[in-house]
Structures are given as C-alpha cells and as structure tokens.
Length: 457
Image 1: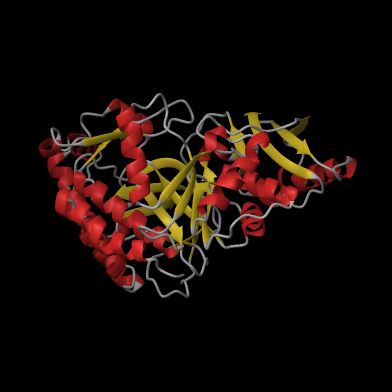
Image 2: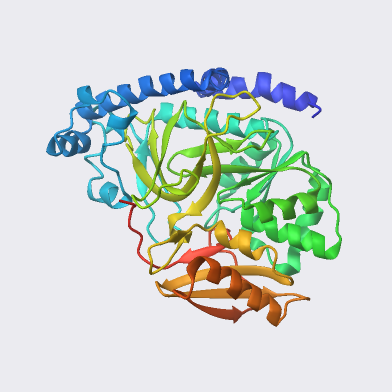
C-alpha cells in the first residue's frame, strides 16, 4: 500500500509533536514496545504475561480493598499463586460485583487520580469504571498495533461508518471534532442515520472521500454491502475493511468482500478494555493481545471439547487504578491452538461467537452461540435478513425479511436444520417483517436472548 507524504508527516512529525511533546503521553513508546513484543515466541510472551500478572496481583492484594477482603475470605494468598492454574482459581468478577463494590475496587493510592468512562449499556445496564492514564495510553497503543495488521495506520485516509455523537454539540465541540478528524485523515459517517432510502448517500460519500481503509460497525457495513450488491453499485475500492464493535460472522465477511472488492478483517474489543484481539493479514484467527491482557475462556463442566465456545474472562495487566481481575464481560469466544503463519507469538481465538446475551439455550442445557444461526441460515434461498429472539426457554422466534426465491421449502429447510440440533425441545415461530432495524447503538443483533444470564460453573 503506497504511503502518502501526509501519512509520513503525521506519523513521524505531527502526531509525535502532539502526543509526546504537548500532551506528555507515552503512547508512542508503548507502541514501539508492543510492536517488539508481538514477535516473541509463544513461550516468551507467556513468560512476559506471567511477570506482569503476578505484579498486578501483588498490587491488588496490597492496595485494592475488594480483592484483599474477598481473597482473604477464600483463604487465598498471592504468594501461593505460582502458575496460571493457581490464578484460574481466583473468583470471577461480574458486573454485579462491580456495582456493589465500586469504591472498594479502587486502589487506595489511585482514588483521586482515576479517569472514568461507561459501557454503552445496550442491555439497559451501563457500567461506570475507572482507569489510569498509563492504562489509557497502553490501550491506545495496542489498538493501533491491531489495526495496523489490517492496513490501518495513523494519517492514512480512513472512513468510519460509526455511531454519531449523542445530544447537541456546541460549536466549539463540533470545531474540535472536525480538526481532529482532519488531522487523522478521517471522515466519519453516522451509521445511526442509515436507512434503505439514503444508502446512495453513504455510497456517494465513499466515492467522494476515496478512503484506503473503512472501519465500521458490522451491521451497517453488511446493510450497505447488501444494497451495493442488489443495486449493482460500485464504489471506490478501499484496501481493507475493518469490522468492529460486534462479531463479524463469515457470511457477513463474504457479503462485505463481494460488495467492496477488498479483504474484510475481524476485530474484537469491548469498552472496558478497548481492543482485545484482531486478525492480521493472514486471517488465520484473531491474535489475542496477551502481552497486555490475560484472556481466558470459562467453560461449563459439561463442555469437554476445546473447540466449543466459552465465556470470555479478562484481566487488564496495566489498570492499577481500578483493576478488573478475571472479569466476565458477557461475551463468548472459541479458542484456537493454531500458530499463525505470520510468525507472531500472540495466541489466537478461532472466532468470537458474540455476547452471552446473544446465545440461545435449550431446555436440555445446550448453548447455541450466535455464530450458529448465521452459519445455518446463510444458505436459505431468498432470505434477505433475519433475527432470532428467545423470550422463553422452550421457544424461539425468527423474524425474517423475505426476498425473491423464498418459499415454503425455505421454511422447511430452516425447521429441518434446527431440529438436527435442538430436536423438538424448542417451538419455532416465524414472523415475516419488512425490515429489522439496527439497535439504538447502531448495531444489528443477529440473535437476542431475553433469558437471564448465569456464568458457567
């Protein structure tokens, strides 16, 4: 990919002058560190991770009242934690634990120096949490490293199909945002405003800006891709597309690549930690940022196969202000024992299966991750869009947007394929709709469960 003069100037002069010189941040130093770390062997990265984890646990025992009290109640002493198996015996941290113990989770020496943000609360339960300046700078560095793997670099023309600002902006806020986006060579399109009637405006914006990279919520990217394919419209071809904020299923990747004519990359992150894992140019799985985080997959005792999804459990190795140790973030993912041919020593996730809230459960105790339904429904003739909703344990509702070619045999196929997995334990109800709207946060929920969620035993 050709590097423009502006990209070179921004990366080597403008951004360092701003980030390192004026703001006194160490983001660029951390980026250099993480770029080096990624090429260590898996064993070296595991050793580095363990050193950083042990240091964090010692800090938690010494300075964080919640962990000191909780671990003492369980008879846990950090000096006795000698390996990752010992570490895995530490109790899980849930959103409910955080809400009930917010002040106790703050390190004593950091209480007056924390930065704060909140999760999006798409399930109606936003979570406010604190973090340190170093943690923020390191998260930013890790995010840039992961996006670089997909061709996104500072100063490279990038179009964001993203959520817009909430509420009315002041003139000064609007001006600052314009300057920021111009400096980073970014253009942002508000995906919240996307409708079937204005798709051509989004396509025109891509043609006008001619970005080298497009970064977007997966749902709006897929909807725009479907419209481009249906209308035969071609847009200026970017070098790569990065799906963010929600799981990119394989059928969605195929649609995006067909419409835009370039590779699409999957990333995985959450607001509590920013980027957790991302695909490199080989796209053999998502590299976990194991030099910055500890990521475990918590499986139920009934699960015996390593290629089955587990609940994601995360520890940020550098948030010393309000550490989340073994935090259940509500997502499901599947591990991989493959070593990527790119040569990086970072471990891989085979796929991100979506949120635990998106998993479908059966009366027999089986859990079907959100990935199952896109995989099963991708071959249904005439099916334009769909959403699976579970409101009762013994019942599923499928909202279907039909196109040419959808008929009774399509319904029979769906019933037959579902029966292979769930038998007759779930009653299936079909609902035909004109459209399936995006959520208020601009995402497309492929599956949605309204059942209460309980962590795996």
